[in-house]
Length: 325
Image 1: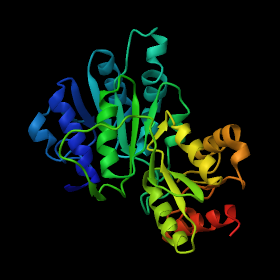
Image 2 (image 1 turned 60 degrees about the horizontal axis):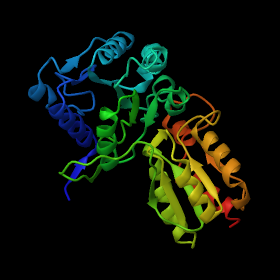
Image 3 (image 1 turned 180 degrees about the vertical axis):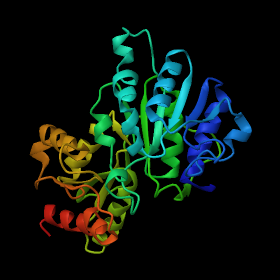
């Protein structure tokens, strides 16, 4: 099977869907002439033209609103944010229009729209450009939230998101665009709302998603040397969440560690903790541990940033704690 970059998987997903359906178009800052800020739309302007690959002004509120209105009138826009930090400028359109329009219109309007771009930290980008927004958007009914961790999942899930009749938040990472992985040349779709057991194991369940899951794999390799067998679940979709896969795993391993690149208060790992204790409390042999960033804005200093972010050593310590090792 061929190996391609994460950015190429994103580009292929958008291009294949645009060839299939002429109502789909891409809009955002630098998506056309510059081939995308991270080259995720490379070559698309040449193939589809300026009416379907549209460079926008630096006005997230404006082009997000245009996309919502366009979706209400039968189109299927893909909106790229250079970073989801910039989506804060357009969040009123996402939350108050895209997410709520179907209910407010009594089902008269679907909003088939994908808002995509990078989330969370990406090196020395400091406090205002290093925020994880998964839990922000997952808190809103009417939005689906997807955070893939590899090129294969990214392509299959993005194609499903584009075909979905509801608004989807599709979150990537600046630090994953160059990641390589096996991706089939033939068409495939990955269903929204289905987690994936990336590494089967019997001693402890580790749940994670997005780029930070790499630290879980590193930790699992180290722990295996000490005879601790970790099962790693990649959520892939944050909302709707696949609770069953998590619960079934915890019933087998009796222990749970959650790794998430976000602030510790009111996040996705908090929700998972609640669901597991309410549905599988009697199966737990140790308290659940969740691993998050420090409860501060992201620092600029690389030394402080390394302390702020979760890493594989944090995972190793947490797993040993729940295993009483």
